[in-house]
Image 1 (cartoon, rainbow, N blue to C red):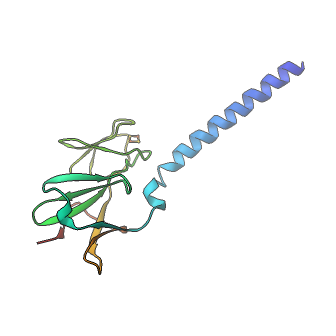
Image 2: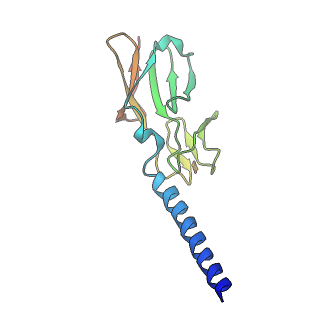
Image 3: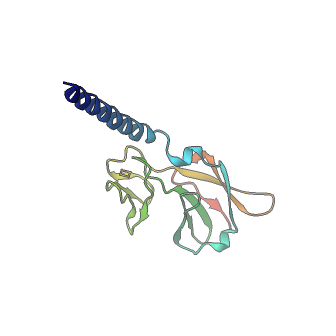
Length: 146
Ligand code: FES
């Protein structure tokens, strides 16, 4: 009888732990890692970034895109459960569950629930570029460096 009670309690405990893990995973989609990170990030001289290229900044989970006249900053964090996106020729792809985004950060296929965030850029007093992660902009936004 004691053995049966032990097994019953063990099964209940394992179910509770599994439920807790599932709950945390579910809630993480509303609080991606970038939510708790620094809000203003100095990314340096725009000329450090190669032209017509997305450069991944792993410290901040951002992609910086630069062309001849402007710079843009987009989150590299998948809006599903927060995995880091890989750049593809079509846009971005999540290695965890396969979500795809186009170059504008728009979801092409799920399970990602929302588009990627683009962030405002500004110049700091020391001349370096700053990504302001508290200010979301649309995908058309560009910071002119011309
Ligand atoms: S975390 Fe990207 S698709 Fe699930």
